[in-house]
Length: 71
View 1 (spheres, rainbow, N blue to C red):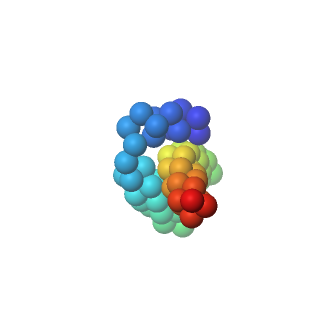
View 2: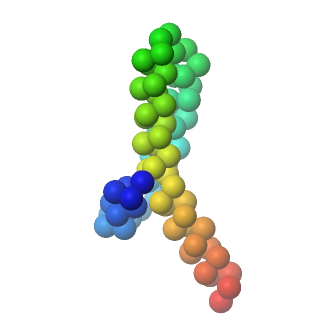
């Protein structure tokens, strides 16, 4: 998650959130038709990477919202 957070800080943009949700939902859908244990593990790794992509942007979005409401 730390490398993705640094990448988000360098690049920025809302596409991290969109990309994270898209990859996570696609892998979740593919998980319903997984035929072997290896494919389940591969999809779980992909879901973990998607979550690592999603979380830094989500945290920054919530921190910015809290900051703006506190002012």
